[in-house]
Image (cartoon, rainbow, N blue to C red; front, side, top):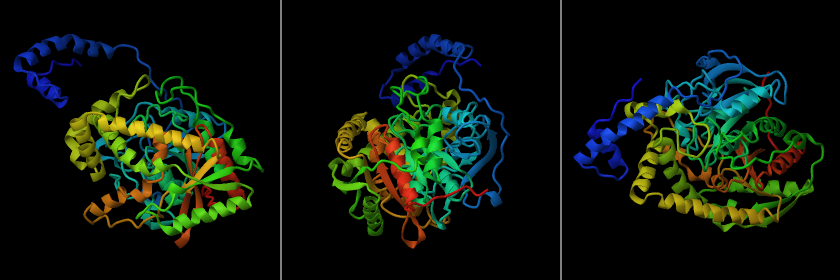
Length: 515
């Protein structure tokens, strides 16, 4: 298909969006000059290009029926069986709806991407299958992943298996709910501010945001390249370790988030050893008593856990990182501007450096945004409007400032983690809230989606890159509480060792797949 020259007025509009005003004469001149560039774009279509593979056969897949989807956690069912050998043999795995599986739909929880079907398997999908795992479906996701609750997916609310009247958290809502209900052994979520750990905390399962770059993001739908993480969600420390073992490691330069070869470990051995090392645990004072946000019972549950850890032989000391209180400010600026620029503005392609890109999602997204952008959930419109305004009015000033404060914040945590092995605090400041009536005006859903009590502790570590694991422990009202352990860069083994020692002592909630 020939790419036709743009009309003069179309060039003027495109230039003006970027702050450049063209006269009619300049625009006419540029229309003529554009032909050579557009001919080159045409020739690229016939050139050889790298493609991610889809190595394993699969069913076409189907939409789930109500009987198999009691919590609305599945958005699509499929069956892709892997190699038959490896650490995930016998494991059923669900994938967040931003992780492409060839031939299966991917919507990022949004009406805007309805009808989009990837042509390749993301690197993590291939690794799951190579490790013997079986992908049994795509899990419901918040609209464009911009919600900490389970209220914004175009397919409806996801309900918490521990109490179906309550939120499952977000944005990896479906994965956490499926693990908590025993419908899968584990799943892969994406985390740009807490989206693995928040639903894991509220649903009472294990959820790990790994060290930045440990797990390749190759091929997946981004929000902002400096925040994007993929990681495992599972019902036990061992199941989490098995999935991490399969998906972690360098991707040969395909993911520019991996600026160097990631340091992997034998995670399964750590999670299954009978006796692990005793650790020095730093209780982060800024992780508690968030004014107006923290549930005192949640804070008390984590402080009580700290006492139990000393009984297991670990030592606990209080530590402080004052910049943790500025994490929400960093996140508000960086996530909104990043989402507006890279996810929404670039239609999911996002300029992030050398590596693999999805060629098709950009053109699909541009067309879909023009026709269906008004169907986006309010939190996505908020990012587009406010984040877009910050870019248009101030350029990258506040994005850059937030990144620079994040460097200082990382150095504070690095200093603490040179003195203690891990940090401990609540994952979320609250337990699962009741879901609003879907028939109500969406202000109730928006307030829950953007509730800072969900994200105040989690978001810091997307910006500093440290690994953070939500460990499920019993809480009041029959609902779980998430205990978040944070380690040094590539310190996942320490976090798994702590979780395994807690699990052996009966301090955690353990969930098995219903077979």
